[in-house]
Length: 164
Image 1 (tube, rainbow, N blue to C red):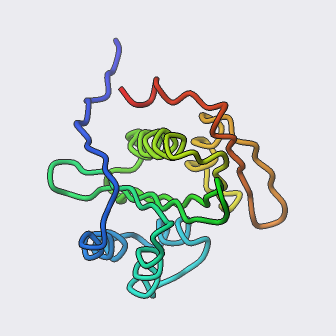
Image 2: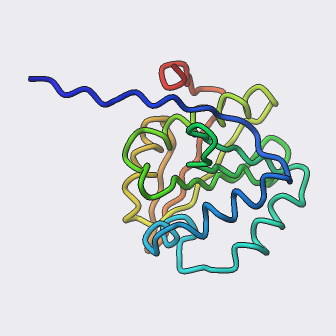
Image 3: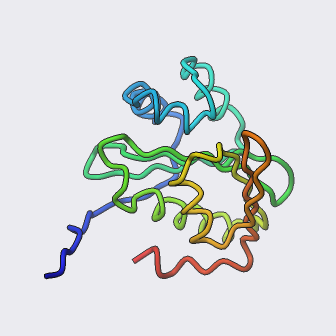
């Protein structure tokens, strides 16, 4: 007997400053575990953080929507020409359904289109979900002590299979 995951109709788009409240609501809805994995520690000053990310026009914030509900956020924070740092979170009750993978694929595709060459992600060694996503997209993962760094060469990644 085969089990087929139900297909989820997701929409992806770049978020704008008028989406800040939706992002704050998503962050405020997260469990302590999701906050820990997203921020690599326990963090609560979401309002100041979200304002700072949206305040730099070089940063790109992507959202995943299921209907009208924001269920995932990926921040591509500008580091230098062609290089961004990625941070991603999916609402607790939607995790484990491939939404994060598809959001990363959407972001990589858009960043490549904009000319970006490198994407970097930092995580804890016990964040198995982001490490699995890192492997799917052939990131180079290096872990030392309590931090893992993944470097993605965007020019060598084909995301087509994840976008359909």
